[in-house]
Length: 272
Image 1 (cartoon, rainbow, N blue to C red):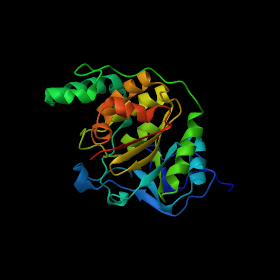
Image 2: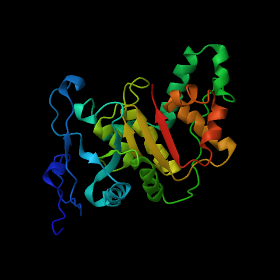
Image 3: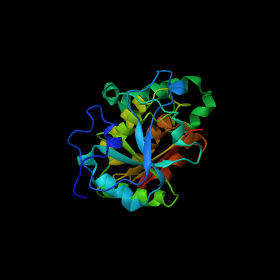
Image 4: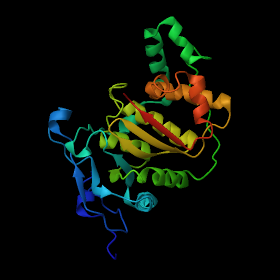
């Protein structure tokens, strides 16, 4: 393909019209996804939130899009439509610059305090050994592999489910959640921007990348997972504030959950 410029439909995703961005491959059939004004309550959007393929794609196709992200400015996602189709537009895009006003520590502390204040005293046992005292974010992990290679691996694991491709005009994978208007954790936290700040922090500390997104699910690759029980317990505490359902409706307590994430190169979250 001699012309590497972005197709017109992808240029719509950028405020500057996609100037100077390149993509070396032809897109599969697909179209841009616009937010539903009736859902957002904000009127007609000025540009679409993301682009989505009509059919599922291969892991190799996802990896190629990921490889070209520095040139295209488009972060690829595998989109799970098992709960609800993305095309209905139940998304609320936000400005990624707002993410800079939040931190993983601030989010964790606020959620911990709010939830502990509402919990019966005996329910604090599920948070042992921390109880009512928020331990704060965990220390960074040690890279066990290249983060992009681990993202490609997870894409291979997810692609077998038959998931379409999403392309989001985002500088990094965490920002894609805000830009596309993902509302997956709505029942836990009404605004997704602070949660994107947490994922940014995980990118930096654990080599995480956003690979798969569903109506109420999120799949991250992790290149620097915790490898011992103490570190995993600290990470588990972060996961509890980010997605309580993972712990409460899963193993039931932090210590049991921590055992599951030791050495795990994929973190999956779901919200009830």
